[in-house]
Amino acid sequence: MAAEQLQMLGIVWAVGGAAVVAFLLATGRLTRKVGYLFLLISILLGFLIFSPMAPLQFQEVMSAVGKGVYTPLLFLAVMLAIFVIIALVAGRVFCGYLCPIGATQEAAHLAPVPKQKTAKEQRLFTYFRWGFVAVLIAAAILLSVSLLQFFGVRQFFTLQVASIFFFVFIGILVVALFVYRPFCRLFCPIGAILALASSRARMKIRRTKECINCGKCDMVCPTGEAGKTATKAECYLCGRCLEVCPREGALRYGKV
Ligand code: SF4
Ligand code: SF4
Image (cartoon, rainbow, N blue to C red; front, side, top):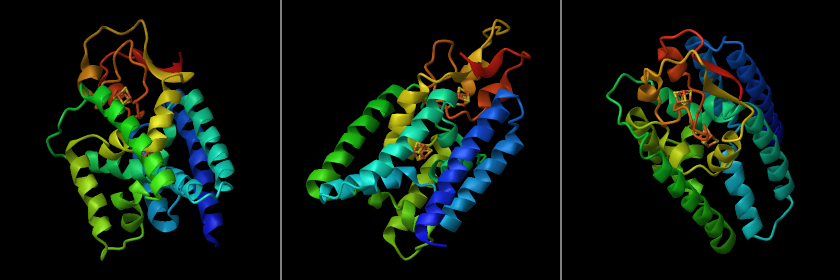
């Protein structure tokens, strides 16, 4: 199959999978095991067809613009519009389960090692990420430098073990063992955009009147998004809060 067809296959998985994950969440059927299955498929697709790789496509389009090539902008606009609409409806289902880069970090963070809590630093991370995205765009357009190429995503998923960048992504995964999704929360341009959309999502995990304010969801949420007034911009729909909630029906994914 041609590279474009494989890329499209990944995008179909992203869009179709997002609808299925949102449906499973809304009907209470997204168990941890089902979630792991989605993560596994997304990781495998990353290795097998290197798609969907939305952050890298964003970078490639910015680099093309820097070289005076504007035609891929339309592709980026359409792709982003689809992902933003999904996030406006269902939150960050793409980031949560369908992006191979996010899924790999999510899987790493499942490892039974002590975790570094970074929920309080989330706001700082968000500012940092927007700063990085601005530098990424400026570097691509003004200097023709693709900053994301230094993170080793391509080398990792295409198993270029002789490349130094392969080990940069390995390093990110080592950090992800302890810190929740470092690449997503600090560097990803798509994450920055989808966070904005997710904060206005129609469907979110929300507390109902059954909530007894025990605070257990707050304690397990890795991004500090379980609070009553949290925007859910950085909610990756990981399900940790749903899992620990002791009160039936106190936390629900549904219309806000
Ligand atoms: S934040 Fe970026 S890297 Fe992370 S899951 Fe979302 S699109 Fe993928
Ligand atoms: S613990 Fe709950 S609120 Fe926090 S990121 Fe996971 S699903 Fe979202």
